[in-house]
Length: 84
Image (cartoon, rainbow, N blue to C red; front, side, top):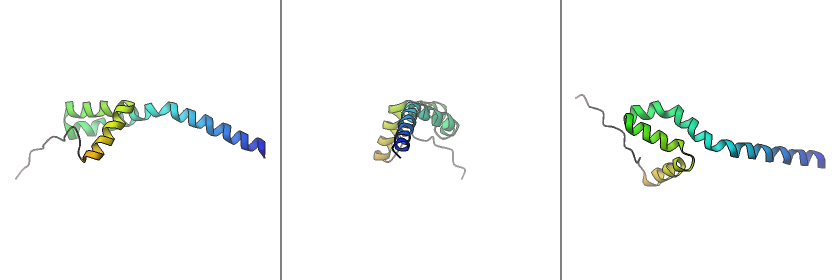
């Protein structure tokens, strides 16, 4: 039983270390996946800047937390013309 417990703890530590190394890359992957939608919503410059900020590991997290606390985006969506 003790060997299984030690093997389980060893595996958990390895997994935690591997996930810890990959965390900065997760922001970049998510930003790349959402850049098209951001450009459509915010325009080319605004969408690119927003996605670039989200791709930077700690900057993107801080920006998203500040936007949630503030209740709106720092880079506003562009105004689409209304037909009416």
